[in-house]
Every structure is written in C-alpha cells, then in structure tokens.
Length: 446
Image (cartoon, rainbow, N blue to C red):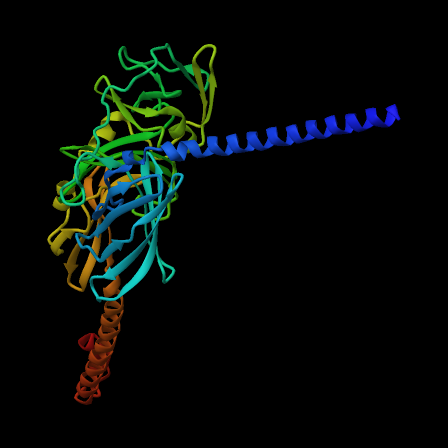
C-alpha cells in the first residue's frame, strides 16, 4: 500500500518537524531567561557603597546613612536621624536582600527617651540617589526621604555635600521669548539657554513682566547648614525654591507651592524638579522657565523650528513691587525685624531663623513675654514703614491662662463695683434732705 507508506513517512517527518520546533522554542525561552538574568548577574551594586546625607526640610536636623556593603543580592547599612539636635531613635539593621533596584532590611529600633524598642522594616530604592522608607512593626512611618550621595562619611562627620557644576553645559542657540505676543528683551550675556531640553532664563528677566515678585534670601539655618531661598509671589500664590549648603557644597533644590496661605503653613504642594534644578551660568542665577510660569497659571508653548517660547498669562498682581522695593524686602533681615519690637515685650528670641512670606510681605516670628504672659510676635516688612509688629498672639499653652485672667479681672471688677456701691449707699445716709444737695449727690458719687 504505497499510499499508506507515503502517508506514514509524511507523519514521521511532520512529527520530527514539530519536535524540532518545540526544541527551538525551548532554547529561545532559555536564552531569553539568561538574557534577563545577565544584568543582575553582572550588576555592579558596589557603586552604591558610600555615605548619604540630606538636611531636614525644617532645618532642625538631618538624616545620614552609610551603605557598607552592596551586591546584587545583599546589603548592609547604618542610618541615623537627627531632629532638634536630638537622636531620638537608634536603628540597628540586619543584613538585607537586594532584588533589582530594591533592597529590604529588617531593623531594630530603640526609643532613646523611654528605652522601649520595637522592630521595623527599611526599603531602599537604589536609583542614583537612594530613597529610604523605614516603617515600624507598630504601623507607624519612621522616616521617608531621598538621600543624595556625599563625598565623605556623613554618618560620623559634618557632611560634604556635592558641589554642583557652576557652569552647566548649555545648548547655545538663539532662544526667543514672547510674553502675551510681545517679545521679551534680554541683556547681552544673560540670554535664555536650553539645558537638558528645557529652557532656562535669568532669575528675574521674564517673571517681572508676568507680574511675579522674585525675592532672594540666604541665611544661617542651623549650626551646620545655611539655606538659600528663591521666593516668587503673585496674588494668592507663592512658590519657593530652597536648598541647604555649607562650605563643602550644596544640596539639591526643592520646590513648594502655597495658595491662599504663607510659607509657614505645612499645607503645601511639592513640585518635582529633580531634572529642573536652578543653576548658575556666567555667575548669574538661571531658573526653569516653564515650571515657574505654569505654577502661576500661565500657558507656555514651545515652537521648536524657531526656538521660541510663547507665554500667555494675566500680568496683574495685587501685591506687585518694583525692583527697588524688592531689594528693600531682601534687605529686611532677622536683626531688622528684632529691632522693630518695642519695649512692651521682654525675653524676645526668634522662634526660627527662617524668613517667611505671605503674598503681600515678608515676615519673621519671635517668642517673647508681655504683661499677660508668653506670646508670639509676627514682625513683617511694610513698604512704607519698614519693620512693624504685624500681629501678637498668645502662645498655645497660654491661651487658657489668658482667658482665666480675663475672667478673674471681670470678677474683681464686679467686686470693686459692689464696694463702690456700698460706699455710695453709706454716703447717701448723710445726704441732707435739701433737694438741691440731693440733686448734686450723683455728681459727688460719680
């Protein structure tokens, strides 16, 4: 049966082809798996070994970490957190595991105030800077933050903060800027630039025309760090760049936004500017154009063929100040604010070294004592009068006492009035019946 024999041969060939295809698929799968394993097998996680540091956002302390060992599968670290110059918790970490860019470590946490202890977990994201998240077994978050790598052991010494490049690489093209269809002019040597595919402009060049006030401040934040602030205000909106530094270098800039509030308020919006850091070019401060413009509600468009930026926005600002007035705000320092406090207050000390802003002014906060007890004084800058006492409020702990003093005074006053009435009644007994003298008696009583 030749037909059957041919069919049998065909089936055999078909089976071999199928088996061959199956083998090829298996080989491809193995190769694919090996390819996915190659990066981790050859990953050089030793680049993460070193010291990491970040200044605390409220300026009262810092977080520091040393990555002691780091491979593709394991990691050892030490970490500490200082707040208000106090190390409240001591952290001890087990050897952790590493999978891809994530490291997980168990830890033991001791409360140095009470001596109590509990376990916790640390999760590190290894991606350039290291993001650290530490949670306790009790369900609380102990710490979350991004720690940039620093040059020396920040764990044991005052940190060396990375010094940014002062002359950033820029794309030298002729960038034009239009504000509400009107070209913006720039001085020679301080023109807009393109850096990392973003347009940067000199600090005040465009924003003044948009009705935005721009203030620069630099002050001693704590015993370790100074801080630089770039504060922009317009109507009810404030945005503020901030970075800490010392003689060794600078931390990265952060950016926050407040609406209908002031920069003391913890209710703000953080804006990610990891790739949009202000920088210095030819000794001039440059800031990212789009991020500031859009934070104040402007519409920003980029035309690549002509390298032109078009900005459309409302330029009105209820609290707009000219450049000379802005300079006076910048010159209003902590000592100037202190000098504005009258002799009605004693034991006056700054609550913080930080200059704060409302949309209409700059101010500092002090603690002191008046005749009633402890108070907080807000000393603001008035464009016509200089430093003035903007408000005085009782310290939170003193509010009840103030109310009690008021009630006591009212009772004392009532008792005094009763005594006066008693004296008046006694005097009335001696008043003659002469109508004229009786009519004059109220004047004597008054």
